[in-house]
Length: 181
Image (cartoon, rainbow, N blue to C red):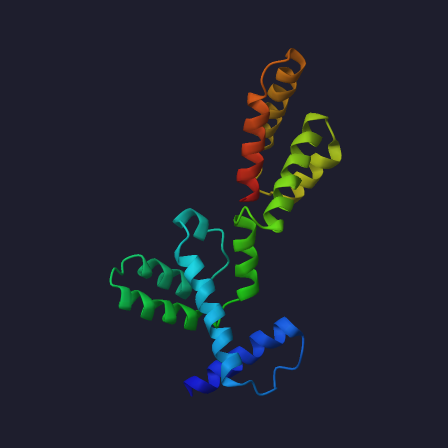
């Protein structure tokens, strides 16, 4: 029963990647490779801080397994627990998890694109662009408009006076917190 479920999960994972029919019978090597990829992805999750883990879309079962892995000290026990995390990962949305990890990793294109988006937002706010404000409000429902307006006003005042952009940095930091980057 365990092998059949593993083969089905591996077939679905491989089918999603290659956009082909999942009913094809996969070889043991393909299944093993897919399971090892899930285990590596789980290993990357184990290395994250608690604040970063909150930004990752995952089930409570996976969150509990990752939390428990932090208490394990012995090498062999860690290896077995990583295998368990890989097994739990079969029921997760691996693409959503890997995409969230890519946004957090500063060496990826997704992170750079998100970072540049924040810079465009900051620059648009400093130039009183109403479309930028609407974009931010629509994408960040937890936005505190009063705080945002105060930061924009302070940054514009500093710019006019030729002072260092301290408030502009605070504005960028606030936008970064809103976007969970």
